[in-house]
Amino acid sequence: MAEPLKAIYNAAFLKAFGDKVKQAYEKFDVERFLALVLGEGWEGLELKQRMRRITESLQRTLPKDYGKALDVLDAIADECRGFPYLFFPDFVEKYGLNDWERSMRALERYTSGSSAEFAVRPFIKLDQERMMEQMLEWSAHPDEHVRRLASEGCRPRLPWGEALGALKRDPAPIWPILERLKADPSEYVRRSVANNLNDISKDHPQLVLDLAKAWQGADQGTDWIIRHACRGLLKAANPEAMALFGLAPLGDIEVLEWEIHPARISIGEAVEFRYGLRAPTGDEVKLRLELAVFFPRSNGKLYRKLFKLSEKSIPGGAHVQGGRGFSFADLSTRRHYPGVHRMALVANGREVAHAEVELTADTEQGGAQA
Image (cartoon, rainbow, N blue to C red; front, side, top):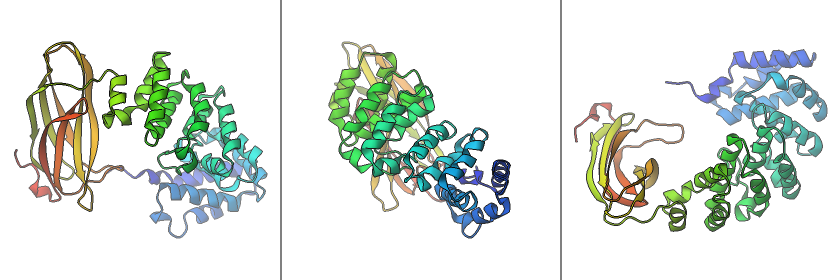
């Protein structure tokens, strides 16, 4: 089994980091820093809790003056790049809310080394107007990492981040930033714009649809943004979103094959499924196929999750066939529970076939034939 991500913060990593700090700040007590970080309860801390423990331990071992502490971190920032160093912007988030100018310079610098998308959110909550002006300024920055921060940091529903309630209710302050970035040359930035719009679509679907219509056809990169931004609306079979991308409701589509094998497996195992369809006769149609899986929660209630299979234009009356495996192994984002799992084939938003798979917790129960 792969190590959890939080294991990146081990004693060897922390000692190497402490030695780097010592080179920039001679008074830094590496042993005390390690003792503070690895002290009581360390093993039970999850990833973000470990980041915060490192941040708090740095505050206790760096100069007490916030500006002088930043000088030390600035001195080694170029040597500390990558995901593990998210505690650099976290230091700013935790201790820099009362020193706006220094904190903005620090976040602008640190985001290219890791990412400051989480750290900017308390500043937005503190003074939304001022921070959104700053982020609009960042949206014109020559560094793609800073431009991405302008979009990613103000996502109303950023995963792992604090939800921004005011922007969930009224996303208007976000529009100037996304407008400036809609044709950004960096895919890294464009993906963030799409994710921001997808967040907004969960609370304001019509606003995102209207924007998509206004942007559509202006630029190839922008077209990709709006398609990715509307993915949640497409999964929900929103009629206006479906029409926007040429996905008309289908008439009499014929299911030629829908097989799932085996019909009974254990958690951690996989099934294979195959499908075969005949499109309605007549004109060419655009066909979007998805797999819908209805997962039981721990309380027994079901929730549905869609997985895209394919999307393409086909002649009227054409046959479409395919298949693949589907794993019921636990993920960091999804845990599986025993019970009947309904698996359905969805064509242009409409369920056209279904079957059931029984998932068991006992490995000896798995592998039964359909």
